[in-house]
Image (cartoon, rainbow, N blue to C red; front, side, top):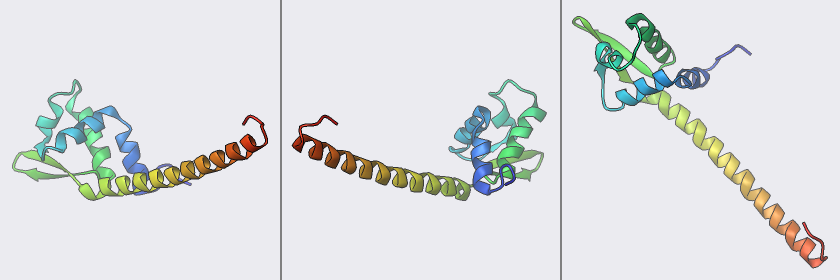
Length: 118
């Protein structure tokens, strides 16, 4: 299986970096020009542009040229896909833990009847 083979893999890879997560956090408030996004980061613009490229390549952000500036915005659909996956996993693990709790409660009740510690 190729590394980062699905859009979801690419999105989680992109979000694994703190700089990219910070960019996403700033874009939650609305679209911004690249110059404004880059300002708080202590790195050269080409290095910062690489972070934007990763976010754009995986579909988490989109950018467009407006006059002399490039503006970035979030693409909510990719975040929805990641949130849906995480919610499905949360439900699955909650169900498993609930079944384990029922099993352990039943085992404890059976052992109490026989005077054995669990």
